[in-house]
Amino acid sequence: MAYGTIEINTEHGVAVLWLNRPEVRNAFNETMIAELAAAFAELDADPAVRAVVLAGRGKVFCAGADLNWMKRMGEMDFEENRKDALAFGAMLKRLHTLKKPTIARVHGAAFAGGMGLVAACDIAAADSETEFAVSEVRLGLTPATISPYVIAAMGGRAAGRYFLTAERFSAAEAYRMGFIQEIAQPDELDATVNAILGEIVQGAPGAHAVTKELIRAVAGRPLTAELMADMAARIATARASGEGKEGVRSFLEKRQPAWLKAAKQAARAKKKK
Image 1: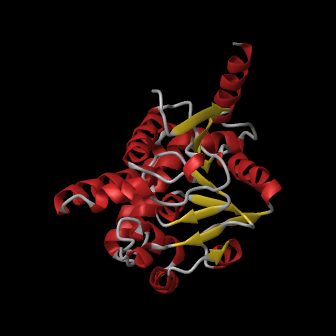
Image 2 (image 1 turned 120 degrees about the horizontal axis):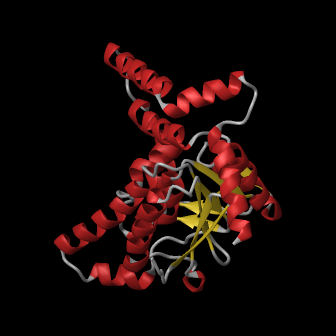
């Protein structure tokens, strides 16, 4: 599918999805939201894609909402705004529930909805010069749509401060509170992301999918008998699966599992084309 506001490059089983509106600091509008939702669905369905990196062209990752788009929203009624917000929320959920591991490669700035994109990814790495802000209250708005993801990523106490003050904070502060998991010098950011990808591709694709589902199912739940039964059923299913049996066999036989061999064969076949 051809896209106008984003760009996708796929190599060695990794899809890098670039926000590609550098002239407006990768601010999103209704077109970008729709294209992101479509792209996430496309990448989720592609068995050749093992992981997805979300990145931004130009000087910043994402400055939030496009001003012209915000102006149009301000002229619409409640129902039109509700539908627009639902579309943005659905796009974030699509990213959050992607079966493949996702990494946000953050540089320059991630403001407002841009922070929602970062928080909806599984892992976030930022360069040391990046600034963050949840700026909605300074516009008379509230960060409602991104709040489930950002609060889960930074914690309720930190969200209480940064949602209400709308102040900018540094990559070091984002790292301290756990909003990002890796911080790197600007010229080392790609190497940092590649190192994470190198670890990710060692895992099995099916195991990644069910583990992401597991995290969503367990997070925030009390340790009840129902939860313990659910977890026992999940590990039993994994042990009985083809991937699970192959993984254990390959470990005991001290060889590479089949999914790594398949990935290498696919890479070699692509080079020959």
